[in-house]
Length: 479
Image 1: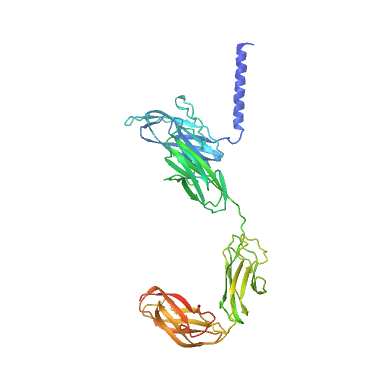
Image 2: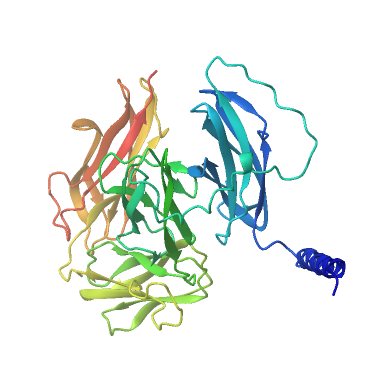
């Protein structure tokens, strides 16, 4: 076969391979890796020694660009992350390098997407002239083709894996990065405080993502508390002039089904020590401390754990962070440890099943006695003015089974200062009434402590001798 014919066949084979390669690139769909270009400076730019060089780049990737690395003469100079931790499909980046060492320098950038795939590097070659030297303006160009590597210098090699420092011994290093003492990841409930801890070496600047927060570390180990509401991967970046290194931990948030939590907050009776056969008012405070509405529920109150149900309330649905007070009136004849229960049959799934029950021991007095106590103090107006008369009232009760007579009532206007006195009072069993007087404050104070005390001299034998006084704070305004 003649040499010209061989040449034609070889040329045809090369054309076929080139066309096949072009078709493969054109029909392959989305690029498998990110792309990046440097828009400034151009390859013919000059800068004076000490001048700041702003490297402007534009990166694109369908999955999202998460960071861009800037190399100077094949050495990693700095790494900058996307403002969005999930990455951006189009990311414009400005990275600054201070021009040093007069001569030719290669600047290159590499972009990384959310999967850690790197773009092909894009490089420009610039010249640094001595300080005070003449800087020649760059030659305008309209070419959109990728610039050649300066002086045929090959593009820099792919950067090292972020968590493995492979540079010089002076490069930054992260000894460990942990969440609550664990490497890799931990699982906690939403809002739980987690302590991130680490040790590093040869670090000029440190940052924590998300948020690009600057991290100071006055002493090892370094710590920082977080309380994420959603699953979050934290990235620690250690930076010095020779490069950047990263480490990662993930805080997984455990998915918890929202549930109601019916709680008995209070249980009390009034009077607290009733005489046998007397009527008492039972009060129960119920609330929903859970994260979901409670369906209809039942509350019961009874004598003892196995006693009969003396009061029962069938309540409708209760939203979270809501509640109310339930009341009923019963006659008590014996001392008992009473029991209140909400959802006592266990029909409702709750986040806490152990706070549905409350007990209260009630001592019933069998000896017929009086029972004097103060239920309310009123001052009208509620914030009286200095030098102006106000009306003061104390409401007294006799919760016992016998009449009370010959007792004394005192209202103290401020601390030990007596405001009004009532002598020789009587009050029938089960009765209540107001005692009133007029009083004028000569001074003013936003927090006067006023007190009503009944049976001051202890003239009446009572069921409970320790509940005869009531306090009210009064704000007296200046004239």
